Length: 72
Image (cartoon, rainbow, N blue to C red; front, side, top):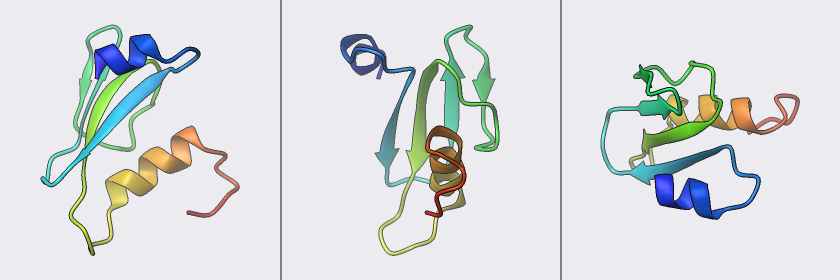
């Protein structure tokens, strides 16, 4: 994920969606978070996503990085 983050101009974070059950986010200062309500700044993360199931982690991240006034 660091390669994607470094290769995309003006990107501040990059995430991978995977079929699992644990959210993780690493900021550039190496601090690790396992709660999707953390402050998303510069860093990389993994968001668990099971097709057909609602996902609060994905929703939290989208609300953080996209205009919070826009419903997802």
